[in-house]
Amino acid sequence: MPLAPVVPASCAKMTPMAIHITGDPAADKVLEESPFALLVGMMLDQQFPMERAFAGPAKVLERFGSLDPAAIAAADPDTFSELCRRPPAIHRYGGSMATRLQALAALVEQRYDGRAERLWSEAATGEELLARVMELPGFGKQKAQIFVALLAKQLGVRPPGWEAVVGDYALEGHRSVADVVDAESLQRVRDYKKQKKAAARSAAT
Image 1 (tube, rainbow, N blue to C red):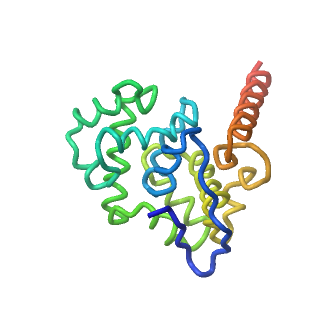
Image 2: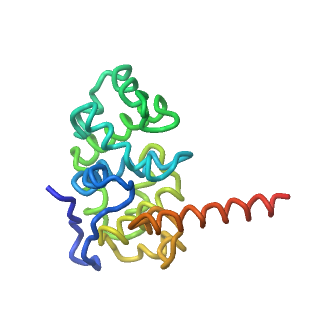
């Protein structure tokens, strides 16, 4: 079934948007239909083009046949690594990301009974949601902030205080994948990131 946010009654809600991140309607549909896929796409969004990172879950589904966290966690590590590394790989570092993906699946299975959406649907505040996301393998504070912003802006998951915990990612603009809704906005986010990197290099010198 399509991905639909389930949030506490105290959370402000908005109408969820269709996801348009990868440029591939089939891959975007996987993100819409599987909360775990969206989580995996965010995990893969590191040192890799964001649209290809978020297309990774569709590759896993096609090759492994399932995005069930329990099945992924229980898969033979060598076999799972091979399918993640097979061209086109799910990531530049397909082997290490395969290991991390299985660790993520194991945590979701053990802590949330395999239902990734519980990670955000049961969070009462933005602070709690951010803390939950930061507990996940491969999620530092910045990545967690971006994912919380993505949930808020595109799925309508807005627990009280979410803006405060994500900082500037809550603002209007094109700062992260949370703001990607089409090819134009994807390019604007890329341009923003390039400007940030150039500014950081300039400050360092």
